[in-house]
Length: 457
Ligand code: PMP
Image (cartoon, rainbow, N blue to C red; front, side, top):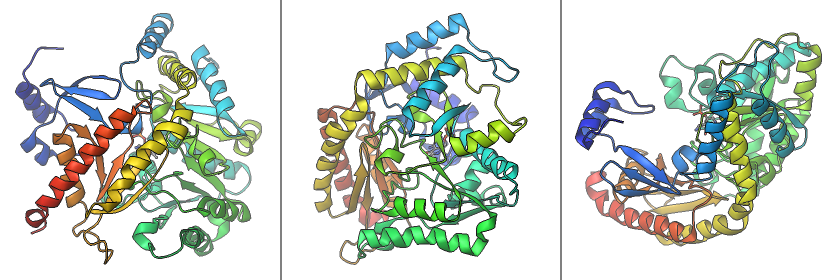
């Protein structure tokens, strides 16, 4: 890389680079922080400042940065076979090996993998696959996919339609047809005084209502993240998923589980489906699959859909140049080996996960904190204007963003989704680093509280 000053990098960035999910004018006024290197759970910026990454990149660098094993796996594969496609009756060893490893790891029955490069592409694949399944079964009218408000399934036009992010729907002219969204099972937002289990049944009942309104014969599938991540770290109440599963079975509707964030140890099991006892027909994987070192995603296809696609399908007219990219597959395989060797899933379940929740629990006393929720190594701290009156901030998001900026200036990355502070560190985080992360969040909350009179004036 050329040797430039931080200011020169910022200038070039503002002049030529459009970032994802960014207000360009605001960023140009402020300037990007230039990240130059990383190791373990730490990043360094171009000024040499160390930053603790409480978000594992974008919920993906599960095994931490600086893993030479992954560098070597990529280098070996690139020397041997950097690329080949899988379209015309060819396969590569890393793609076959990874498909078979994933079939072993995934919940029972999910025994075929279709590869893509991102969670969005994998979800687009699922949309096509699910509708193709119903067409092959003689029900082409079963096209509607029901998702949830504030569900996130990606940024392509189809994946964003399946997701329930209203800001995304507003840009570019709404959603594609045949997508529907029910309310998310957000106990703190909708029903904090209600018994969580009763609320879980009620929230799952919104699916039944939607199916009845649309007509069961038109519904292809329901889609959900085990824990909604980008929508605000929404942990489903007890019984919610069991009831969703029952409703799907009753109406013979396929269950799609998006494990892009929850997969690969985040919830303290290999998959969120195991943590919440969900039996999906089809599942999306990405992020932790390669720990973010290279772009790769997979659709894990269960036997019901798989059998129909294989036996009745003819050509499945879908795929990507880089589906099953051998270098990305080699890195994913090595990532899985690291996870197993270092028992990272067990570490989250028994050790750092409970420790993070214990440390965050103390924040419930903070005047700004309405709720602390989480599972495994993913947590949300929801900020609220008035605890007694259960009054949220208005406009939503200003306070969360201010707190996030304080965390960033205090050299810890913690994200804000509206007014919920979200933590999702690498699975290798140490208890001392958790202490540092939570102490910094506490200090940033204090700073945010002091800012309130001017911020909300
Ligand atoms: N599904 C979920 C649950 C996600 O969190 C994300 C990304 N945050 C996606 C899908 C989309 O993945 P990608 O950004 O790799 O397209």
